[in-house]
Length: 198
Image (cartoon, rainbow, N blue to C red):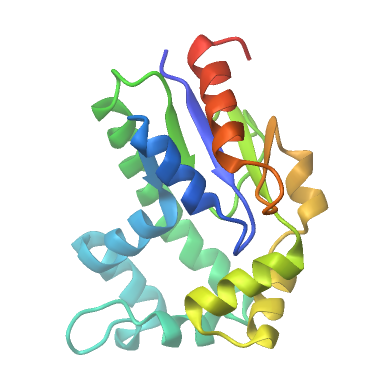
């Protein structure tokens, strides 16, 4: 049975970097957030469902998903956000299951997502990796990467689950704190996961 490893971390923690390192070792990575974006832009049934829920303005005249507008609608409306997620998440799940079947020859698969539950808690993960980094370092990275203000980034971090909560679901932790070698940690974890010792 194919092993599926969830990988998560807060904004600026460096989970995408970790995934890139794994992918150079021929480990397929499913990026749930970018796949969801792609499906919301290209899957006609999903687009239609989103428009039925939110109205025509959910898409630009060019047919692109209108993320800023949608965000403004659901930001202070948890019920509407829940309804939107109940449309998008099942479609992403179907897409990821098809993707898993396409990669049945890999030693294991990585599933990257910002939100995640513990392995086996209503999901397909065998283990979960949490990428951890100090908040101040995360803020510096995102300011450099996204040209956002410190306040904007702190607001995003405040809306995400806390590092403490995230660490509770971790089977493995990669510390991306500019002190420990990320590459060494990834290589060590690769050995463990490939050898099926966990």
